[in-house]
Image (cartoon, rainbow, N blue to C red; front, side, top):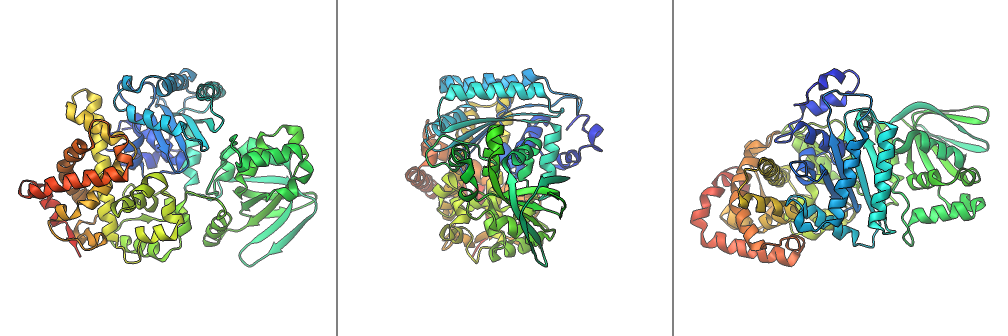
Length: 582
């Protein structure tokens, strides 16, 4: 699939991982772009991400990827180039400039004039930009060459132009060149809590130390200009073990980063008592004459402080004193808890909050019996096979299936942060076989969407296929369909369902490749898609976001399936034979 990729196997080991994955109907360029995007935004269920984010194709308006993360109000928009020569000296900067053209289309042109597959994304992005919440747009230039200053300069200009085009104080436009070296760093980050492994000296004067059987710590003052230098040298790699990276400064009242900046700029002498400082995780440290030398480091708390200090003028940064705590530990379980408890004050997206939950451990053990990996914690993301089931990906699907549609589409982090919603999504008695049932339903919808994209790209799709793809291209459409399916469970099963959690896959159908049950869902869904699309109408944008419309569409489809149960029965027979109710 990836021509000439073997030429860099010895230098970049992520190439082995990308080659062994099943990329379904994606082209090499599409797969490479999705792989890089997934590593970058921590969405490592790549095929699910591809179904949502891939916009590459004929007349794509220079936009190959558009992914909108509603949990963080972040839009990732990318241009992807894969050269025949891997690891060439640099990518052509004019390829990056294609993003400027694409952003003009996406933000300014009449939506109806855009290709049908881009219209849903354009509508969703524009609606996001109408919000008064902090919003971040990340412009990504993804390629398989070495990063270069020319490309970086071009991207900086495009980001500035896009920022002016939007013209809103609550919107930050950032950019990132993801060349072959940075993609390798992102891949390494899956396998290391501490990505920076070199020895790093920091100035130290007064300090005190704490010794423990499992860890050792030192507390001291770090000059702001040295923290600024660290960010300049290592950038986002500083935060490899942090659940959140630097979120940049937005001009919104009450935004913590804006407050930190104002504190540092207006009263540097009081920065120490006003700021909680930073916590650094390291493998080991030694203290000598006037300095502490860290053997590797990651800032696990204080990413926002670090980022703000990095943006200060040099003379201001030199005048502030940052509280600094260094913790040395190599025990993986202790490290995971250090990371977790150093981030509990943030409204975080990570499912690490439930990493030690008994239900999650039980599901992981149950899936092992089927030779399926179930990733429910940060360390579980490390080099996972393509067949893995991801807790954070399946969670919103479970929520939708069981009536928490709005949580799934608007704030899926609540599933893990709210005890009430977590217990409704992952009750103590939930089975691996039920999770598998919902996961394969999700996979079948993703597969249908990807297949339709490939068909439409050839120009041979029917008008009905194009309309269905447009419907599925809305980011909430998958959760809408899953929610509808949950409400149709009795019509699909052909009998009474007392508890949807009792509907589950039979053991023989729970396999790592998920093939049998995914196919059964595909056959069943082919009967449901036209009914849902027809009930949604010609303008489904608001429909697939509304609980009231969900109920209306479900009731409409249910009445059709009930009145024509004999005609529809055959399409559900395969699914019925592979599942059980009770």
